[in-house]
Image (tube, rainbow, N blue to C red):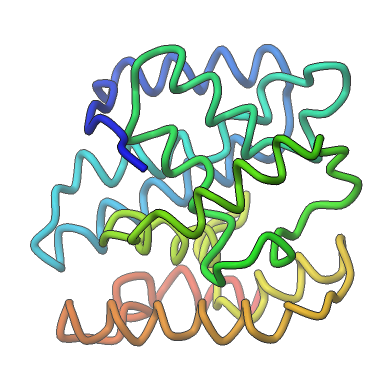
Length: 208
């Protein structure tokens, strides 16, 4: 599956997120800002493009801005994908889908009541089978698991928060294992435990 590599500027991305908040206010926006900040920091430590990582983190959940007949909160990955493709931002569209699948199986999606059509399901299945994740896909998957609306936290906390809201599935453990493998990958790529980049923030989150 081919995607163009176009991403918006930081200013354009921030405007898109602000408009998204105006259309559908909620903690998802603060979560995106945390993910973007974490992505930029880790990317720079790993020799990646920090600005690109920031933009991708900022817009990975942009689908929450559009309810589309009240589907927005259960199908944000497809809405974000379609909207970003329409705007010509192929790299962002790709991230809108890939960030939810560190474990490559459609059953690993954490949302409830997706209301996907059969065509939508097949599109996601084909996406997952055709795509080879690059370091930006992997980075945003990781940062999605590090970021809450309040800030960067231990992945364990974020994972449990998702399970408390959406419940366990037969793929939950595989998805956790895939996410912890991402941390190991970026620990090695950066030459350091990535938690060290946010250590004060994480400690404050633990003891607050």
